[in-house]
Structure formats: C-alpha cells, structure tokens
Image 1 (tube, rainbow, N blue to C red):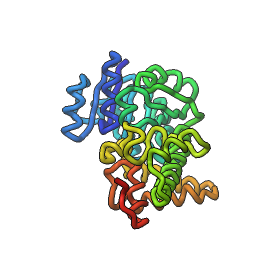
Image 2 (image 1 turned 90 degrees about the vertical axis):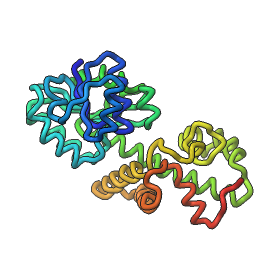
Image 3 (image 1 turned 60 degrees about the vertical axis):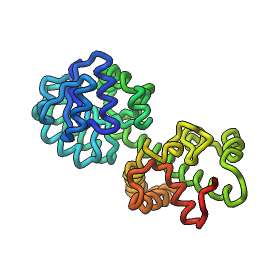
Image 4 (image 1 turned 90 degrees about the horizontal axis):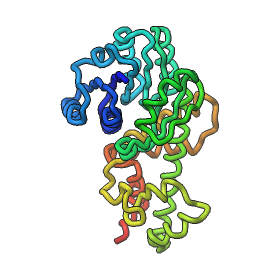
Length: 297
C-alpha cells in the first residue's frame, strides 16, 4: 500500500521501518534531521513537508506527542490528501481531541481511526505492539492489514475515541500498579527482604502484576527490565506523566471517584520534574530517596 507516516520518534521510526520491511511504499516526514536520517536508512522515502508525505497516499499514519499537534497537523494535511484517505492516528491523546480529529477527517472527505499503542520501543521494533482502535467497522477492516504489520494484537474497541479511552485506562492502571509495587519493594527492603526473594514470592502469589514479572523496577530479577540498564526507557517518565494527566482529566470530567489514578498522576508529575527522561519504573528510586534509605547492595 501507499502509506504516509508522520512522526519518526522512538516509537514511530521502528513502526515505519516495519511497514517498509513488509513491502509497503512509505513516504515519511519528521522535522528532526536525525529522525530523517534513520528513516532513510530504514528504507523509507523522506520528504521535506507533512503535506508531501500524504499526497497520493492510501493510508496516513501519525505518531505525534500531543493532541494539539495532531489537530494542527490535520489542519495542514487533510486538504492535501486524496479523497477517502484512511487516517490512522497512533498518538496517545485526549479522547475529545481524538473525536475532533476523526470528525475533521470525515468532514474533509476521509476516513479515520484512533489507534494508540502499548508495548514500548521494544514492541515497536519487534512489530508486537498492541493496538487499541476506535472507529467505524469498515474503516477498522481497511486499516487492519497495515496495523497487523506493526502489532501482535489489534483490538477494535468501539467508535471514534474509544481506542484512546482504552489506552488511558490501561496506562492509568499501569502507573498505579508501578507506584504500588515500588512502595512494596522499598517496604520489603526496610524489612530485610531481598529483591529476589520478593520476586520469587510475589510473582506467583496474589500480588503479581505485569509491572513485576515483565518490568521489575529493581535490578536483578528480570534481566530485560530497564532497571538493569540504568533506567533507560523503555517508556519515559515524561510519557507516563502525560498519560496519567489525560487519565486524571478523564476521571474528573466524567465524575469518577478515581482517587488512586489522580494520586498516581500527582506522584509522577512531581517525579517528572527531576527525572523526565528516565524510564517510569525509576519511580522506585524516588520512593526510596523519600524514605531516607540507601539502595541495597
């Protein structure tokens, strides 16, 4: 297929590369020179403007930092696209912004899906992302062959904006669970429980979670977790802070008594001021520091 891809950051670059590997014709755009160089190395055709990236394309994929940018970019590219182009936004943005983007695409004579992802940079590189998709059934069917190249699981969650709802709910739960796990680990340290013993018990007990068994926030028990690589992301604290902010806004706007989600957003907002670039699992170091405790040898 003829695909336009806008946004070649840590996630977008390997996603676009996998489309090229699968034989798709990819026109790519990103304003960052290093991202352009990587896209060329991966086999995409890099063009100098966003509007050129959508010209003559059947599908246009965006992977951008926030909803305002998505809407701003849509303002430029929707008029430049061929009629009935399928726009797939893989950014993580507010549900209201996702609905607005879809409405604007449809009003311009196109089709639209919101399709945020889970799985991090490793999943993007391996083509094993989970896509949470919102949009019409027919548009989902049209986009599925493209999404399956980049993902291991593609779930149609409902109408426009519902894919974003799934992503926000998932990441709120992830943020809350990582904070709770980190507090339990630091408590275990104070009580003389080693990280390995903690892992051996909890990973097969009622307190087990993905945060522990796949993404353990302390070095040792899960060798592939960011904790074993000086908390290099992975999924950066800045991104978790953004997602929890979206969740906190959704809780408030929809009248949900979401005390844990709101508190997790506050905790990560504070941590983000000092450690935005480190992986979000480094929150355990902040909890340990605030507990006046040295990291165990």
